[in-house]
Amino acid sequence: MEVKPKKCRYSKCDKKFIPFRSTDPTCPNDTCRRGFEAERKKQKELKAKSYNKRKEQIANMATSHLKDTLQLRINRISKLLDRGHPCMGTGKDDYTTTAGHFFSIGAYPELRYHLMNIFNQDADDNSKNGGRGNKNYEGRLVSTFGLPVYESILALKRKIKSLHISGSELKDACRIAHQIIRKLESENKMYTTSERIEKRLEFNQLLGIYK
Image 1 (cartoon, helix red, strand yellow):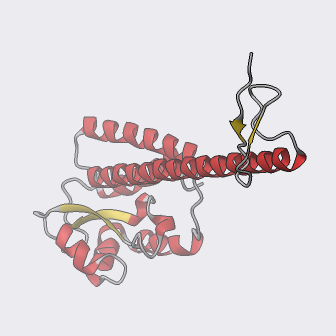
Image 2 (cartoon, helix red, strand yellow):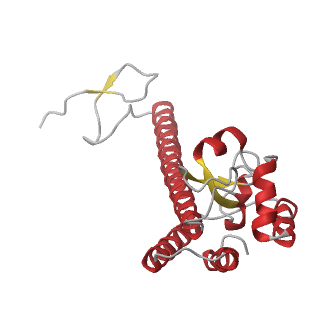
Image 3 (cartoon, rainbow, N blue to C red):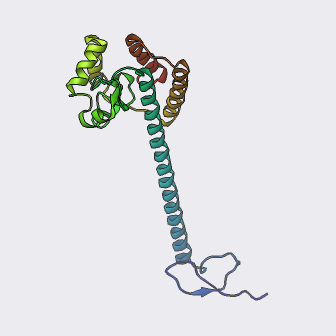
């Protein structure tokens, strides 16, 4: 059977050759063989690099989604604990409820999930005045919970300097937060001032984010 010539697959060779085997990719010389092998190795490395980069991007997207989900659930817990109580910033009873972070997420991301850093606040007041530095918010923390609680909240930024939480820990915290929400929703009650603090401390322990 006649063997037809085929084009050498080494990019720097444009010749045709008669292969010894039909699967031979290059001319039967070391230059073409080694050159082709080096090119194929480089292609495999680039493909693996591209795959790993995409894998990392997907993992980062998943982590980002988990962080956002956990934040929503932590905020929901805070809202349920403070249900029926006045806005911490304005003192109003009738207001659009948001989870008002005393230490802002932007400036103190390590405190974003800490329930002692989050209390119900009017949406407009939260947007315009925030928590820390808002004298009304700070004053109501003291008048509502007492000076020792206020001072323990102030101490959070000194005690917690960073937050390192893995993907599996985020998943666990999301699951536990969901269970806490279901429990609070089923109780359907307005918690006392002391219960609002006691349960925040209890749930922080259950969530396991701040050990």
